[in-house]
Image (cartoon, rainbow, N blue to C red):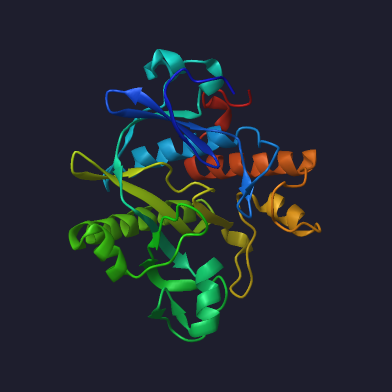
Length: 295
């Protein structure tokens, strides 16, 4: 990927963030992929553009629920130091937001860490759930289950009361209500297209005192996407994301510590296709029409 001639602020597992001036940020979404908290050596072609395209779709589609930090995804609107063709389709010019120090997680189905807690204690984030739920069961209604943002290591699940202690009662209630409505609307849209959104994570922040949704929205990286026709309570459905990578790594004698083993070309290709299919099914748009697709 081309060098961005802007002040570099931060690099995560997937995104690189730059200062775009005038209280704006440039978010560049790479093709890096992580599994078991380890970044693989091989990029997944078009993954960054899929995540950018899908987030842009949801920011627009759900704008009546809450505003976003997104200003533009057009290369022409970026600062001069970021107009390389390599960055087309994977860059978002955004308003700088004061991010809330919690992860706004919504669960519509019980899976992952929530299933492990329920199986052990009959609870989810400490709240008692009905008896008899199976793995991947749909919950009676979507539930807001916040967590901390860990600087290192894993995030820690917290109660709503603890979230309110961190960010204040008013912000916590607004974050909960917005997150639940974003999930309900997004999940209903996806369900009509044969995809279950089992759970998701939103990043919320404040711009000029107004709550906005930021980073990415309802993508295969921030959510569990299941094909509806493969969902059966009592089992873990396949997912539209990095499942081929996870499945391959699970079959190896690898201790889940860096350095990661190399990924075969077939796993890379299959994973890329999963991301593209998720975008096209969700949006009804051809990914080939998105700027930079396939380059």
